[in-house]
Structure formats: structure tokens, C-alpha cells
Image (cartoon, rainbow over the protein chains, first blue to last red):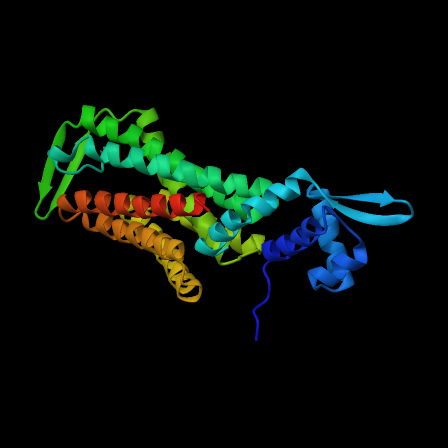
Amino acid sequence: MTSRRAKIEIIYDMLRAIHEKGGTIKPTHLLYKSNLSHKKMTLYVNNLVSNGMIKISLIGDNKMFAITEKGIKYLADYKKIKEFSDSFGL
Amino acid sequence: MVQLLVGPEWFYGLDTLFETFSIIVSFLVGVLAYKIYKLTSQKKYLNFCTAFLMIAAALSFKIISNFVVFYKTVEKTFYGLFTVTYTHSFDFINLASLYLFRVMFLIAFLIILINIYGIKDKKIISLIVFLSIVSIFFSNFTYLLFHLILALVIGFISFHYFKNYSSKKRRTALLVMLSFLAIFLSQLMFIFYVYQTGFYVLAETFQLLGFLFLLLAYVLISRK
């Protein structure tokens, strides 16, 4: 049995999925890659948008999620965040 | 007259050096927690930042009160096993710094306790903080009660970190556990100080050891 992912891990998985797709991703792809329910993913997307880690852009008629500089910084510092969280039991 | 916390004369000034080291380490951990808060926007990291910056501030106030002891100690009285040091000119600023140290140090560790145990109920949090603060202000045994409550709080934190290390098995988690364990032992030593002044040196040394472990954890985390 695998353990539940922590919030910081879910955010990391979502941002990594966008980054690996070249910086932008379709909502359906993100839903598949993040392994979350639609409701949960919407909550996380709203959270990421309000924190400035991703932005919603329109390419033609398609809605896309794009990673921002802050999101890329989160990916770079993820190991530090994870180590801090695990060490201090957060 | 106010009972003061001093160790053997040869230790005067060394404790201030120890405290300065602890202030720097607390500040570094607080800043790291703030950087992580800025990245994640999760309140628990901000709480941790607040707690460690409060520890740094509290220890600064302790240094101020230590200076007062260094310059104004005028009388030592021996009551059997007890050695009590008094000063007759303990002005408002010095008394305030001692109480600010106690209140801030206690609240800082309470923030860590509340955060890691995930206590969210504001009524419970208010009750814990209120009872802790009131008991150190309105007691005839302020000094003893302060270190006893602190030992209890840090004891619970250490137990949490023992469980955390058991499940994570990370080197940094071990260092954090050892850090809080050493600070917990230092509080016990401060309690025994009333029986023998030598315990003050042990208490300060354990506290230094605690912050040394914390610094090692900080360095390992920062290098990631």
C-alpha cells in the first residue's frame, strides 16, 4: 500500500508535469499526470494560480496551464522543501 | 529582591557566547523557514519561521539580563544546598528583559508544539498558551515552573521528532530529534541548578549542543 502524497508532493508532481511538457499543458493532460480527481485538481490549480506558480493562458480556443518563474523556482528548490518538511515533521 | 540565574564565576561571559551562537542558528533556521513559506505559501512554514525568530529574540533578551547579573550582582546567600544570588538594584528594563525572554521562549516552543501536533482548535490553543503564561507569572516558584513547563513542552516535541525519525529514517530528522532532546535535557539541568550552580554550566552546554545539532541539520538541508 502506498502512502498518501503530501501537499508539497502533489504540487511538485503537477509542476513537473507542466515543465516536462515544455512549460504548458492541457487541463486533461494535467488531470491524467497529477493522478487526482477533477475536483481536487481544480482546488490545486486555483491554489497554484493564486500563488503565482502557474497561469492560465488561451491558445486559440484551448485553455492551457503554463508554469511561471515562481513555479520553476519551486521545482528547483523542491528537494530543500521536502528535506525541511521531513526533518521538522511538517 | 529578584532571584537571578547565574553560574560559576569562571563561566561568566561564556554563557553569552553560547547564547549568541544559538541566536545565529535560530535566525538561520527562521530565515530558511520563511524562504520555504514564500515558495509554498503554507502557513505552517510561516509559523515555524515565527517560532525560530522568537527563540532568537528571546535569547537576545536573556543576554541582556545576563549582563545585568554580571555587572550588578551584589549578594550571594547560601541556604544549605541552595545558593541564591540577589541584586538590590534590578531596574525595570532588566526585569522586563528577563520576563520577555521567558514569555517569548515559551511561546516559541508552544508554536512548534502546536504546529507539529496539528492542533487547529483556536480555543485549545488559547487555553494552552494562557495556562502556560499565567503559571509562570503568578507563581511563587516562577523560575522552577518556567523550566518545568518548558521541559514538558520540549519533551513532547522531542517525542514527536523521535517518531518522525523512526518513520523517515533521514539523517536530518535524526539531527532535529537530537537537537530538541538536548534542549529538553538542558531544561532539566536548569531545574537542578537551584541545588547546585554547576548544573547551570551543564544546562548551557546541553543547550549549545542542541543548537549545534540544529545547525548541522540546517547545513544539510540548505545544501540540497
